Amino acid sequence: MVYRHCRFVFGVCSSLFLLVASLNHLLERSSLEYTEIISKLKHSFYVDNCVSGVFTEQEVGNFISSAKNVLSKGCFNLRNWESNGIGPGVSKCTGDTDLLGIIWNLDRDTLRYSVINKIPQNKGNTTKRTILSFVQQFYDPIGILSAATLLPKIWLQEAWKTKLAWDDLLPPEVYNRFSRWLLEVACLSKIEIPRYIIVSGKSELHVFVDAPKNAYAACIFVRLVAWIKRFIVKCRKSPEDRNGGEISNSEFKNAEKILIRTVQRECFSEPKNVPIINVVKDNEGLLRVKTKITYRKDDPCFLTPILRPENCALTT
Image (cartoon, rainbow, N blue to C red; front, side):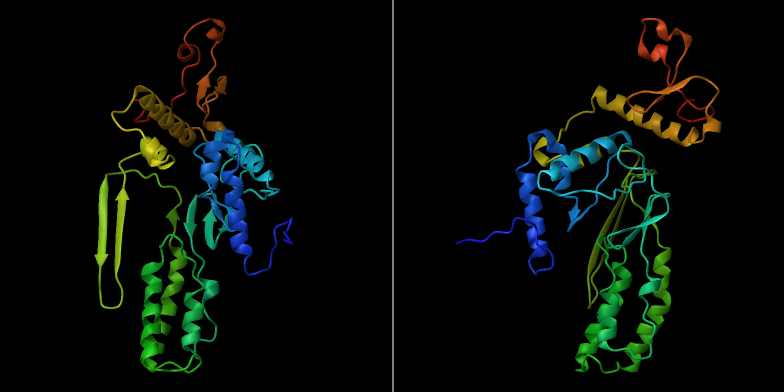
């Protein structure tokens, strides 16, 4: 006789494995209608939290409804959505929100860490247990704090050589270094990095390699020239589905529309900045001027020309 749970079990040692296995099983057996959404969901879950993103506000509603439809087949209810954009099923949020231990500022779309609350109050009784407990509180999935959190780990290794017990006071030299580090670690809360991968400026490659006695590291940073649309599309596809060759005409037109949407968001974000004319938004998110000749059967770009700001490099 075999007994089987009809519901997911929480609170047992195998709960994490069962949840991940259940989600993967559900996604593997889901309808091919949601192939792109399923591919994104497979890399978006951390336990029961889904962290993902889309490129435009128009895609928000489609992602939410499709993701909920897929997971509802397994009686999983995706809820409590938060986004820095507006779309069907979710309103634009503001301020800070906790993102798996990282603070996400939805207004500036940046990530930072909260360190002040983690600093131990009783610094006088510093032991190996104190250092290990403090260092393990830092959840750093993208490695931003690695250079700073490496130091107490090295000191902990040095403390092991003294053969002290877990709750014995550390030698003065280790205690002094750890105390100075505690005074400086609060500055990590001031580090704020952009969440998005797209950057502007020159194309530069920064490489840092270090191999001292106690640790080693190799960091490579790429600074892209501009908005690389093809790069983003390739990241979302499997290696066998990625296209190469020269840039097509449709890619040029798509890139042009992205630039125009970006300029329009910057220049016409406030209603007072929009000229007193009949402006409509098309299905691609572009602001267009609706003129009296829209009743003519003519080219759409002539009937509704794209709204462009004055004194802008893209316009002139």
